[in-house]
Length: 632
Image (cartoon, rainbow, N blue to C red):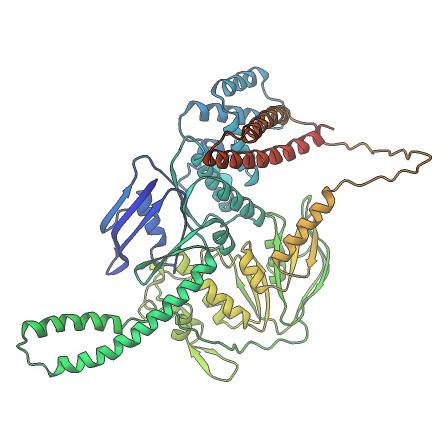
């Protein structure tokens, strides 16, 4: 089914066009990533497709049977309403029944049984249990609890997760044909949430257009990449690796075309100068062609690569020593006797779930928070560069070039030469005409890029990067990675971007909770492989060997778990019912296939359905086991 047609779309802010005369199509099942430099109009294009912004010219046609759902960077929440009121903010019998049931069973205390009985009866009448199970999965995986809490009391990251949950629930509810538009969906998600979202988007039959900086997520989810570059749109079928290969080939071709156009331009310019003012029709057409050649000849290839061998502030023998460091907030333990001595040139990644103390750890290293006990000794030569999530703190009426020159006029290199502030800005994709723009006119991503540049321009020897990839575009990330790969100082990176971590870190501090920190020797992908192996070992049943003449009595200690809530008991009953129905359906399909009366298409459809059933049985079986362990 054809979802969207875009023809001749143009949009400008002021004199400079963001994009000009672009056209593309979206078909059912497409999963497209939109890639571009910050400030090139990615978010604007998404808003035009969602109907919240209008183009200057061109047409957008969306099939009348298609529902467009969008996750934006900012969220239009009613801050005085609760989480559940914002998620289920429209009137529908099924939605109303689920909202009522979820609110009654959300609290730990026993619910009002009369109200609960009525709520369950409504759920049964409307056959709402399947959709409720999907709602539970989404809320649970995104760590959204306490549904009666007001949105205004949540942090920015928590609000982002609620917005994502709302979008995922919306597309699962009665929208047969949905175009899901997502702007940076992985921001503020920890790695386990991102991995779950990858699998969820891969399994759901959804048509998707997204902007993301997470290259593993992009590679896993998307089958097409659209790039906005120099106001034009380029389309690449396939994954991220294929995109990089095809883009490199295109740039080589553009470079050759530009050189050819310059040679032609020189000849045409010479001809133009020799011609008398009164030109024939033939020479007039040649004059018009000249201007087109001139335009191609003056095209700049932005992807210049400046090799920076940084002259870093000298590092002494002592970097940072942490000795028996303890830190807690009430009952929440962050560090429990942590010992570590940093070495020259170390590249450490910091990972762990949200809320386990990663930011507190960083703040203690920087000296902005104190340890409860123990010592943190920082070497005298250490110059920190702290790229925090707070963003750029600067006067809005200052121009970009003025801001950088206020730090320093030049950036020193190891060979004794210097790079000017303007050249350094160009390296980070601020061309000369952009450098005199007021900071107040920059997009969110451009401000992040300028903030990052200002940290690096101060020439620190110990970089602390807290979620550096959030809101940065892929071209900037590539330049940042190249810069950091050549950087000789120490780097500490707190990030949920697995690709970025894999490329740059030597080992990880894994915050496991309750003050425990594991020093893992390797990057994030290696750690995940190790973690999966450990989970597999734990899940394998332990064999109890028995002597042949006398059976060994195995005493199983009593495990005192918490008491199952009414909600969990109800869920267990429904799981048993669902699994029984799925087994019956699976057996029926297997019998039909064995009879040999089905056509090829029917066989293929039946085999696909059996695969889906097996996956659902595995998922429901694991959940049933979790609940049965609670019951025991």
